[in-house]
Length: 551
Image (cartoon, rainbow, N blue to C red; front, top):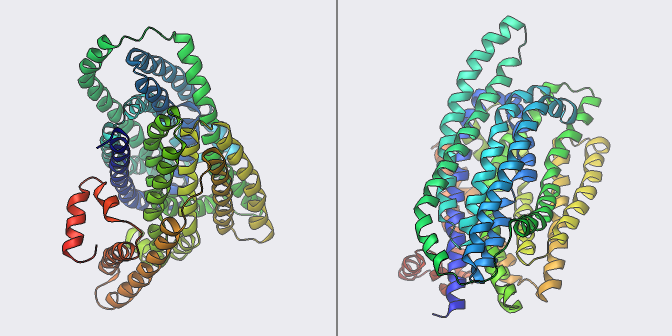
């Protein structure tokens, strides 16, 4: 096998490993949010989600983009054979992360009340946000180590650490929320504050994030210590004369990370802007804080949690494709870069399109199975059906943003995200104020946001690579196969729900739908035998499909 072919196969395999691990991690995250939601209630879920969204934005400023930036810098130096300079990138990145993460952790703790009260309009989320503050520092260091290994072309340490992180998070979040709810209710009775119990319960839930990131950091340190001796032997063999100074590396980190941070921040800040605008508009309409926190808790704590599972594909493939694109662009091989871009986008669509269709077809059964038949079921199911398309658009926009960054186009994603945020904000105000669509206005405005970024990113990729995405196998075949799947899943649920109950019927419908989609995808030529064999354990899967006369 040629080096190029081997590199391509490794890129797909590593991306698949990270996708599978992220799916497992997101599934764990979704599952533990079920008991957590029952403990917190929809209003407590609103406080919990508010704190997490602010925390996510602060992470984007301090460290969320560090893995991608470190991965890119390490990959460039490893490809050039500069092992010692690659190591210096790691050391300087750890110092950079410690300083930025430490400063923002302290500021978050000190200003948590100001942010939640005056920016978000949800003052009771301050308890949860202050608890999250130390996780900003811990995540920054963890992100550097993950990026270091990703730059060496291996996603395994990142994948395993994500699963460990979610397991710890699930256990401690639920336990912490339960304990703090009991304490908060008693304290609330003494102080005459009925909402204090749910606010402290949300804070207890966020402690799981701090503990889990700490454990993930320890795991990454252990992996690095095991890897260090082999890396030192490689450094001894490095005959590179050029030794980068700390100043040069810090400059490279800053120049690499700044546009990534800004584009990522602008891309993701739409959520926090949405919540701030939505809360203030509803407050002006006479809604109470509890009412709009409850509605936002359903949207963010139920729909977006489920949506994040298929979105994990794009968030995993984006960093996994960066070293491959870096190598292709270093060789000025636009054709290879185009092929990897094509494969990554198609791979993402093959998985996210059926997830979106499944969420629309089984919205009510899924919400009932996970969160029970309660007063918020109709709203939660309606949001999921309305927002199904958003899943595909956000996945594609996230991935194409990562592809542009891997191609060295750092400014374009920032401009595209800023343009989309501005336009979507105008639609948000129109939908909520003029049309009075309430939370559905947020959903539809975000669909416009995702669509704009997809179109702008596609134009920039085409201009950079002189490349146009293949349509039939990437979009048309998955849509047709997913449509058949959605009908099959819906009918299976309707039939079995007559005597088997919702939970069994929903699980059976999902399983049948997955099988139907896979068969239709293969039969319609959406995925070929050679592409299946390229995946981890792909030979076994391809042989099984051949024996079943599917392939």
